[in-house]
Image 1 (cartoon, rainbow, N blue to C red):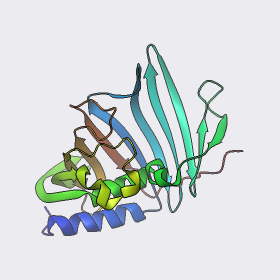
Image 2: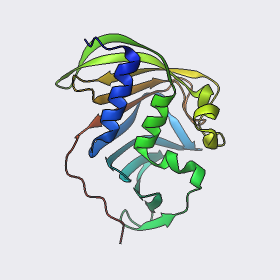
Image 3: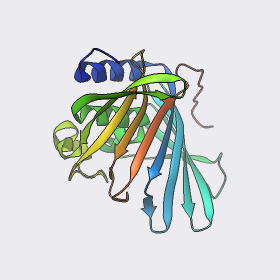
Length: 211
């Protein structure tokens, strides 16, 4: 395992990972449900980030017996969403309140979480895929959101507790996984465990404005 201090390791890994030109993100619930509307559960999100200013993502949601996919493209602060009823390619631009812009970028959400990390400690070494990673344990203290990002206080992010978390970092100081224990937003189950996986670092990714 690393000889770096946990704080130094996290700072280095965040800088290196978020500076990579492209990477893939997968967000899944290992346990618990995220009910975004009555009867509608978010099943997962897959997407790609291309630095410095664009991403695409597909969110899967289940309503009763129907599963729908909502596709999103973000470029330089602008956001387009596909209407799942009219077809996956029917993108329409959406207006997003400027103060909520950070929540529309997957990499910005990760950066926000890392800025809220407290009491990190080197917990163990663990193989993830074909990589041996150092696992750093700590907690994301969402009660500090008003200090770090006061503009997000009116968002659905819960700010009543600190959530235990684990971060997998490989030998090249690249983050491969975040695991968060507990509800991050108001529509999460109380027993939820959320996993964010990073992969496909530096692979070619083209994200264009929808025509």
